[in-house]
Image (cartoon, rainbow, N blue to C red; front, side, top):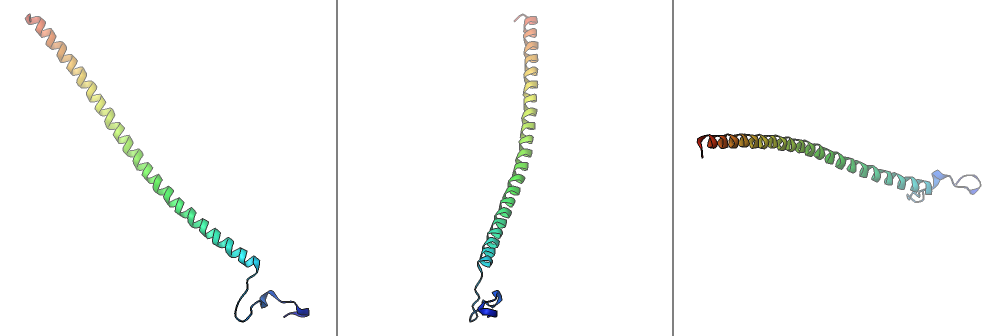
Length: 99
C-alpha cells in the first residue's frame, strides 16, 4: 500500500492473481476485435482477388468465343454468296440450254 492507505495500480496483484483495470480489459477487447476485423478483411481481400482473376479469365474466354462466332458468321455469309452465285450460274446455264 502507498501513503494514506491508497493502493498503487502496480500493487493490484493479490496472491499471484492479477486484476486488470477496466481500461486494460477494454484495450484487450478492442485489440481482439481489431485482429478479428483484420483477419476478416484479409479473407475478403483474398476472395476478391480470386474472383477478379476468374473474371479476367472469363472475359478472355468470352472475347475468344465472340471472335470465333464473328469468323463463323463471315464464313456463313461467304458460303451464302457463293451459293447464290452458283445458283445464278446454274439458272443461266439452264436457260441457255433450253431447259
